[in-house]
Each structure stands twice: as C-alpha cells, then as structure tokens.
Length: 84
Image (cartoon, rainbow, N blue to C red; front, top):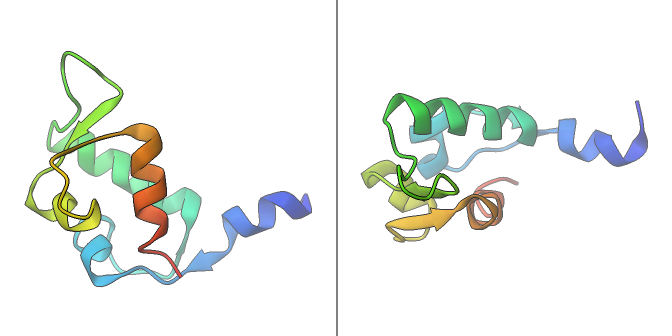
C-alpha cells in the first residue's frame, strides 16, 4: 500500500454529531465519506438544481457547523473537523 494512501485508510475517531449520520467509529475517512453519501442519497439531500450542493437536514447541520447548504468540497473540509 502506498504511504500517501495509508492516512486515508487509517481508522479515525468519529465525533458524536457525525456518528448520528454515519454510525460510530472508528472508521477510515474513505468509509466516512462513503456512508455520508449513502445518507445524503437516502434522505434526498442533494440539491436537484445544483448537484454539487448538499442541503443539510438537522443531523447534517450539526456536522456542517449550522450551515443549511454546503458544496461537496466544503463538506469534506467540515467533515474532517469531526474526525480525529
């Protein structure tokens, strides 16, 4: 396994807010992102007009620092704050 990839695969602690969405950790970042997308699709939270935007429900708003809408890139950054 390439060294640069090992950080991505390393199980990380998931915050309480994020656990409401993706389940309890520890889990690798790649798994967190995958589960986040499952949640977003299941609850139909992708903006129909701009697919890059995620419209947060109450659980995701806690993860997104209270924001109602974030784009995919911002989402990754905000989710990182909930991993340690």
